[in-house]
Length: 376
Ligand SMILES: Cc1ncc(COP(=O)(O)O)c(C=O)c1O
Image (spheres, rainbow, N blue to C red):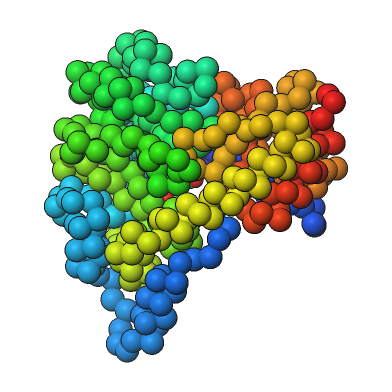
């Protein structure tokens, strides 16, 4: 028996593989999920749902009426202008499948979130990586050069603040990239799932001045709402882009879990207080990272545009084979960091350090890194 050809090269993500094979007592600076408490608003909604009586029916594809009402307020949008999905990953999958197929090209950042090329390949399309600026922010000139050389591009993805680098995109860069895609009839997906996790200034968003034709923005409960396990995200933007993606999403999952939708409605309705709490959790972790990195690595990690990743240059000893090096760091050093090579060829001389974990783990994890980074 042989699975379909598009499965070729598809494996467990390096991040999951690193975590699953970890020896006991290992500290993980590998996973991209908040370690702070699920907000009380979600717990209360889940408890209320659990104690209500009656059946547990499927519900509408588009989400429960209560959830849609909360989204209309939160996004300032009509129902046609958002798709509530099974994680933002569900929206990504649906958009890529709706807009790209065999023979098409999908533009994605390198280094970038590792699901992007996987989803393009699963759709039968060719992933085309584009480089970023030296500080890993979005560079419209570099983006356009790759777009110009990829005539079969149907969809392009930008991610800011970015996984794995924490870098951002200026408003001007977003405008230029959007204009280039629009001129070519290319769908633009702006992945902004880390946007509300900022320390100083709120990063720019593609839809800040209103929905743009041909473009959608992704958001998620998984980061600033601290609820990745609810598996709920969304895409917000041009109804014409969303309409076919809705059909893919319906075919994939029919509709979302009812308890998750009840918790999501409570969380999103409380965004005004949930976000500041998340940012104070983030600020504590950022300070912990800074002091541990200065003390143990002699490194002052640059402030991210948002999110909870630091992008750490590998020591020379780790550059020839970054995966083996990170496996040795894990098995001999007892700490997990993800080799930048997992995120694209241009990430090969870095490691991604997630500081979403507990402050105790951040301090201990960075201390354990020092044996491999210091004096190399
Ligand atoms: C950039 C980016 N986009 C999308 C996702 C998917 O998140 P979720 O499906 O939990 O919303 C992630 C998860 O880590 C991510 O880092």
